[in-house]
Length: 446
Image (tube, rainbow, N blue to C red; front, side):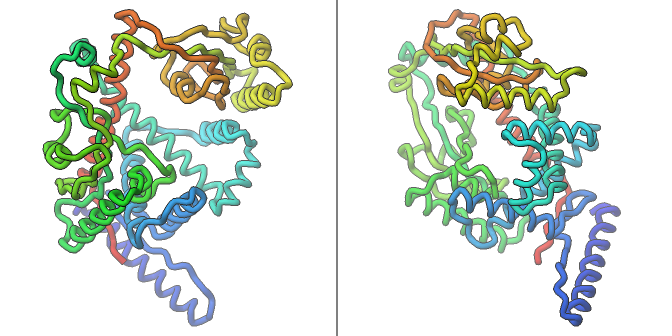
C-alpha cells in the first residue's frame, strides 16, 4: 500500500467515524441524517456509499421499466460497485493522458444528446429529474462516458493492426468453407463472468461459486444469457450481447474448449474457474466444414441503397441550431409534410444534394464507421436519428438492400473491416482486465 493510499484509508475511516458521530447526535435530536461512508478505494481516489446508491437507483429503475428480474440480494450491489471501480480507473487514466472536455464542450454534448432524443435541454432536464437524478450528476456521467470513449479510441482502437496476411487468412477460411475443404470447427460461445481476484478470501470465492451455479441452473431452465449478463453486470442495457463471436478452438481458452466441446447448441456448461473468476458458458452455435460450406456465400456481399442529408455546423450555423434543424426536417418527413428528397435538395451541404441526397448502392466499408453503423441498423424506408461523423451531422434513410458479387478488392476491404472490429473488441476486454489488475483497489465491506 502506498503512503498516499494509507493516508486516504485513514482519512476515510476518520470521515466515517465523524459522520457516524454526527448521525448519533442528529438521532438524539430526532432528525434523520444520511450516513455516507467510503465503500471502495481506487488508487488515490474513493467511491462513497452515496455514489453507489445513486447508481443502484438508476439501474434498479431501468430494470424495473424493462420488466427485468432483479438479481439475488447483494449481487447487483457488488457488480455495480465493480463497474464504478472500472469507470474510476479509466477516468484516472484519461486524466493522466491529458484527455479533457471543457464545460463549453460538455454543454454542446448535452445539447446534442437532447436533440438526438428529440428534446430541448429544458425537456431533458425535466426528464432527468423525473428519473430521480440531478442534472449535474447527469452531466458528470455524460462527461465520464465521453472521456472513457476517447481513452478507448487512443489506448485500444488506434493500436489495432490488421496485416495483409490477416486479410488473406480471413479470405482463405471463407473460400475453404465454400469449397467444402477441411476447416476447423468453429464455436459461438456466450459468457457471463463473475470476477474473483486471485487473492480473494475463501468466503468470497465460495459466494461467487454459488452465484455461478445459480446462473447455470437458470440458463438450463430457459433464461436468456443476455438478460442474466445484464443483471450480473448491473447494466442498464438488458439483453446485451455476450457472444465471444465465432472462433475455432485455437482462439478460445482451453478451459472453455474443454467445457463446451461436448455440448449441443443451447447447452450450458458447469461453471469454469480461471484466474479471472468464474465463467458461465453457453454454446450458442457450432459450425463445421459441411454446414459452413452449405451456407457460405463468400463472394456475395450486401449492398445498401441509401440517401442522406448532411448539415455541417460552422460559425454561421452553431451546432445546437444544426441539430434543431435536422430534428425538424426529420419530423416533417415523418409526418408527411415534406419529402426527404426535397429536404436534401434544400438543406444538404454535399454533392449529393442535387440528387435528393441519393448516394446510390454502397458496399460495406464505403462510408465511415459511424455512418455505416447507423445505416445498417435501419430497415428499408426508415430514417435515422441525427448521426455524427467527421463530416458533420446526418439524417440517413435506407431505400433498399440487395446481394451482389463483390470484386476481389471489395472482398478484401470487407474482410479487413471484419478482422479489425473483432480484434478491437477482444483487445478492449483484455485491456480492461489489465487495468483492473494493475490498480490498487480496496473494497470496504460494511
